[in-house]
Image (cartoon, rainbow, N blue to C red; front, side, top):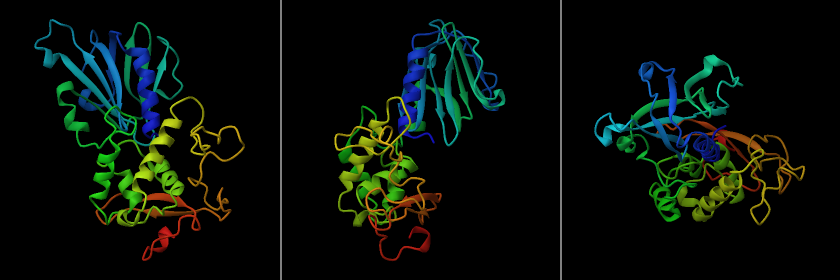
Amino acid sequence: MPEGDSVFRAAAQLHAALAGQQLLSSDFRVPRFATLKLGGWTVTEVVPRGKHLLMRLQGPTDRGPAEQNRLTIHSHLKMEGTWQVYPPGGRWRKPGFTARCVLRTAAADAVGFSLGILEVVRTSEEGSIVGHLGPDLLGPDWDPAEAERRIGAAPDVPIGVALLDQRNLAGIGNIYRCEACFLSGVHPASPVSAVPGLAAIITDAKVLLEANLGAGRRTTVLNPRGVAVGRTSGLPGYWVYRREHQPCLKCRTPIRRGVLGSAAGTEERDIYFCPTCQPAPPGTGPATR
């Protein structure tokens, strides 16, 4: 499941393969941009913004004003999307019918499969697609105080909903919100106003994301120094996520699964929690107990 760490790694891989390279051809397999051809354009950089990927391009210098000569390919992986890099003409590891974007250079082919969002905008208009996002946990704009302020501005919202709201802070998905809540001993359905250590939850989420920027399977089971031990110790990769009915790694109580949305219409998503380490707040429904 792509979250901020997955997007960060994808951006790094694409940047290493494409930055400074001129496109030989482009193939956008979505109706809106099917006729757009960017052969001759140069990829200047690929950067992550929360769960969004921004691939910035510079056009040939003879094609008008500078502002019109810079474009950004914006993509969002959603649940199943992925970018893969191949040697020129290399055989794809995913079915061709799932490809949404194919970019070819002399050095590499980059293919975006099952992308949830794919669009091309002027680079000067990037704010219209990512300007609403809060501070990026893995970005140069990270500001924990601002993230805490934004979350705290809606005290009645469940903390598990607030952490997923990318307007508060960008990069946390369902895995990290469940794991960060567990590490703080907070039930995801607890209202923000009832969370005593909001800054600690935010810090834990950042530590978990940063611990998974390297190679290897994702894990949130870290030692006190922030080093991943879930990959090598024989322990599960997660504390609670997708461990329904399995024993809590701290108290051995079976992990439970529930669903959590909000009155504002936020999509309900699964939550995982330990009923002993994370007691449910009063008044919560059966789906979160």
